[in-house]
Image 1: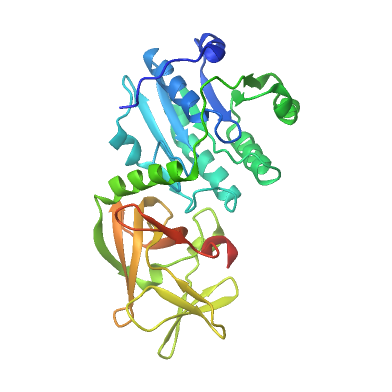
Image 2: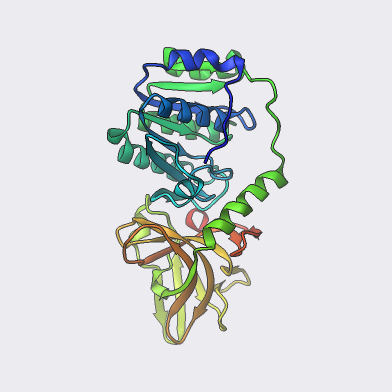
Length: 338
């Protein structure tokens, strides 16, 4: 269960003001301002009032709902969700990175998709955003979410002057809360250890599966190229055509692609990946293991949380092990940079 938290004195006004609230609340602020704490407080508060509450977590690197690198959502009524219910929620969308900076459009679209799935089933929808707040990417991301979701209230944490731009856009819909005393900075290792624990718990349910090599794609479901077959065969060579470039499946049972007429290689081993139905429904996450050239197959260590036939695999930009250890990142993100 979620740990019991108390309301800081600086935020008590929000608790009073939300006693009769219905609709969507988005919380935004730069990193380490207490956004997730505020969302958790609101989540517990509204549930205590007997409301149906949806919690959408778009903080890809510090997820409270869904595994890291995903936008997750949980729908609760009568009681708070358990740790397992939040981690293995069926409402999730794979972005493939711990920051949305290179996937602004996808992240905003996924928040909107989840919101549309739960808004009619909820009295209150809470949206926790990430700490990306710099111009232009942070502004684009927040504005896209606001335009797609139309929240009745946007709560910001900090000084009024910091949010003057948003005041012009949102008017009375914006509520600025002061930074409470006691908020501490989360250092990189603390953030990484949080992800390790979640990944380890998630992949403890994993199993090895094989899918056709043609299932491998390099574009997320919100982009048209998701549905385009990337694999072609020319004689004995197995080639992936991705946005004008050609990548050849290397010899050996390692998940490696080599760019044609170049020394550049893309080793997909240990790549965290999203697994989808043919229509683009998120079924679960996996870890890429190897290619089998003879049988034209991919081996993946996979966890499925939604029913459906797995037909498409999308690698993200993070390398992880089944124990949750992060083994670095790709030099580029295949879904956006190829």
